[in-house]
Image 1 (cartoon, one colour):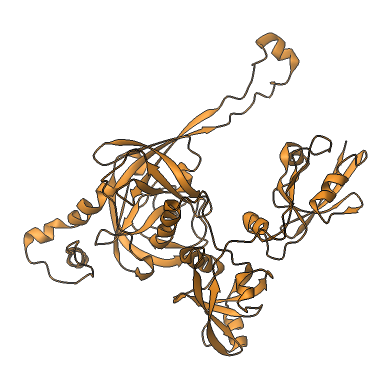
Image 2 (image 1 turned 180 degrees about the horizontal axis):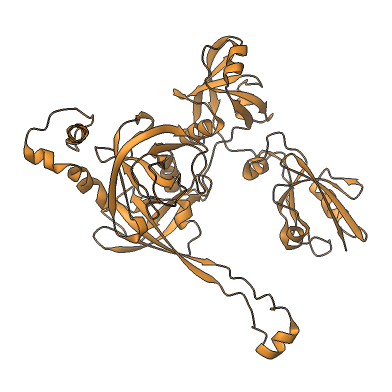
Length: 461
């Protein structure tokens, strides 16, 4: 019975815009299965071979003069390791723009892309973002390539039939089938990606990363990125990055962006619970409650304040900060989003401008030199741009560590630490750090704030 139902839904010409349920007209139609969709979509899915050079480990006796005298000065020098990464990608345009996962190609020194007709192209990453786990590549000397159309992923529904196309385990292009199992999944995927995903039970395995998740019309609805598993193989819980976010990456890549521009929210919040909903007079727990706003936040400028509830953005429900960040990313820099705010028993629609985190007041980025006890330590004033870059709390103030440097790393300093005191000196600006660590005496005591926890470091010079 289930097989018959699947066949009914799949026998849809690629030219038909909307799915239409009908009974197969002949035995030949029944035997087609997924073949028409695969023939249309598969040529636009490519295999990606990436070479990554990793720094090697030094021999523990490398710095010992005794061994250097016997084996030479090069004894034990760390040798770089070459690691080959295998994944998939999807052609998005006939002139050679390809999307894949950042964890497949983000650190690659050499990328080779092989199409289904066995042609090879060298490629380079033109735009990538580790947090979103998306990378846009450009193939060299590519013209008239087959490509997939991007479907509006906001209209994808649970239960839709989908195909996952990729190169699992390097065995060659493979197609697996399933359905959309869930929408708006956040915080559940593994790997680099964080945020908002489509969930599918179509089998996804190593090598499928960056491959296509297509609907029965052969349109791209997502990029396969990760699985939830204990064994390392597919357990029927896979995640795909929605096509709408891929479309924004492609748009920025075509405009020549060197880094993905993510609109800044400048807020913190918590999901709505039944108790909170009841206290606010809401019938159902939906949306999330704002708990803090940076003064320069676009939401603060639009009149939002702590205690407000955000329920929708651009006509779509939002129930967590990751969902809202996805909606903002899709809206794009320079645009605006229509946000439904609930306050005082009433809902209203508010337009919020989308812009990046402002670099104001000036960060005053400072790198300590050899005259200090921690050369290479880089600090800056906490402003919206610094806070967003380090994913710190919107209430962060003071001087933040951007790079601990070699000596600072050994001392226990970490990127994102807020420097509060050095010895008996309160730290207000990056210049204070420079002065406090220039001839500080024989002992140094640093008080840091690390993600809300106080950390005290002591070391002797």
